[in-house]
Image 1: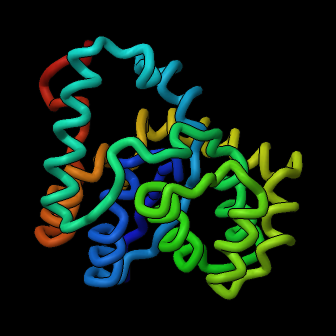
Image 2 (image 1 turned 180 degrees about the vertical axis):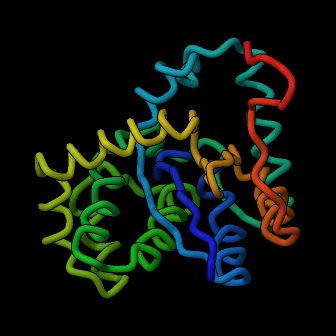
Length: 213
């Protein structure tokens, strides 16, 4: 019986992009079922005590740039540290993923084009025509998906993903949840693999014999 992973992410997130290929390899290696859950980052950050990038202390902003370079090399990627069309409103792009899921379609062909479209090609994923072309190039009904993405039903699903993320203890992108245990950040993929390989019980924030708080 294969494990299930709840995968919380946004196409806005550089870290979700950096971690996506190794995550896909992990999914294939361990025959995982992935529950894709695009999530609105701005609200998730604010509700859990985080700050948008522009509001962080300059020291933290500078360190983030160093980390991007480290992980670019580590993952063997070639991307722009400050792409021309980032930051952008991820609602429409993330909504396309939800629309794909709603239609019973695999979102991976779209994701594997959309992530590098931002960071490598510097395309604008807030632009409907760009999203239509990316989906079309993946063999998907681009215009139909983008139109559906803007609907109230997709907005409601997007909001439900945010609430599910909070309930699961997820506070950033990417967040991987295995058997109730949260692995936050693409730099936790190796720890996620360790958990899968060992078959251990999930860790909990509540330690036996100690009170929480």
